[in-house]
Length: 57
Image (cartoon, rainbow, N blue to C red; front, side, top):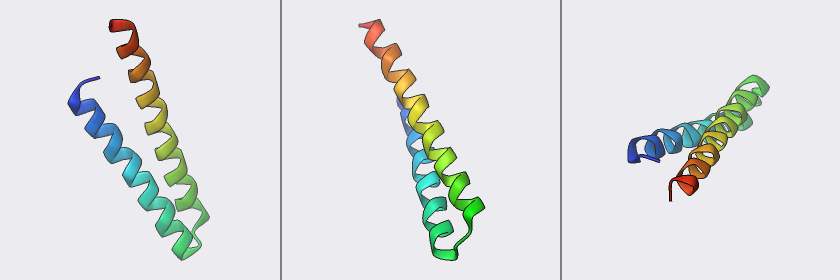
């Protein structure tokens, strides 16, 4: 996984966590769900990239 991909995925993960926190604070269920979705998507992409890296070695 390139450094750029790692950074992009981490930014997306942190953004998702931030949206969840704001959604929790404001009781906005749509924002909470959007944050969880964004975080999950980022984690999935990181997992796929880690699998790719394992096969490259």
